[in-house]
Length: 211
Image (cartoon, rainbow, N blue to C red; front, side, top):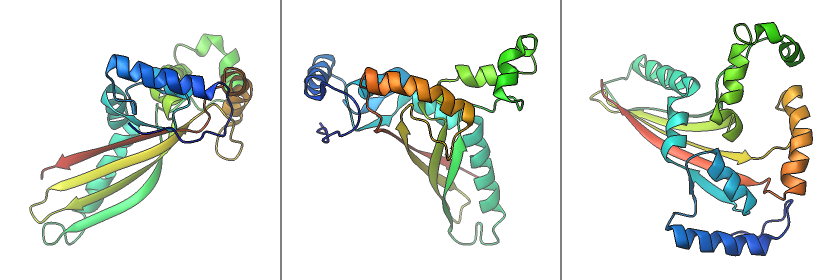
C-alpha cells in the first residue's frame, strides 16, 4: 500500500482521516489507490490521498469520449499516411490537451442561464456537459500518447494522463464562468470541509488496431 505523503495544502484532521482510510481499505478489501468515478475521487480528496488511479467504468468513459476517439482517428490517419507505413516501424509521441465531457453551446453563459426557453434545444449541449461526470472529474487534461506501427500494419497506442482534482479557479486557463463558480465552491469544498486540493488522478490504457 502506498503511504501518504506529507500533505501541506488546505484541510484539517489529516492524521484521523489517514487512520480512517487505512481501516476502511482493510475492511472493504479494496485497492487504496484505485477509483472508478467522481465519488471515489471525492472520497480520496476528503481523506487526503495524494494520488489515485482511474480504472473501470470511469476510465472507459474517458476512452469513449468523443475527443479521445477523434484524437485516435487522427493518430491512425497520420501514421497510415506516412510513406514508411508497412515498410518500417513508424512511431508518434506527443502530449495533447483534451477537453472531456463534450462541448457546451457557444452563447455566453449568462445568456444561457437567463434564456430558459432555449434550454431544451439551443442550449441543451451545455446542460449535457454539466451532467457529464467527466466534466467534473477531469474536464481539461493533458493526454500523452505514444503510437507505434509495425511492418504488418498493426498500430499500438499507449495513452496516459495526470490531472489535479480540485475546485480552485485558474484565471489563466479556465473560463470566467468556471472560475466564478469555483471561487465560491472551492472555499467551501477545500477550506471549510478540508478536502485535498492537490489530489492527482492518473489514468493509462493501451489500444491495438489491426490493419
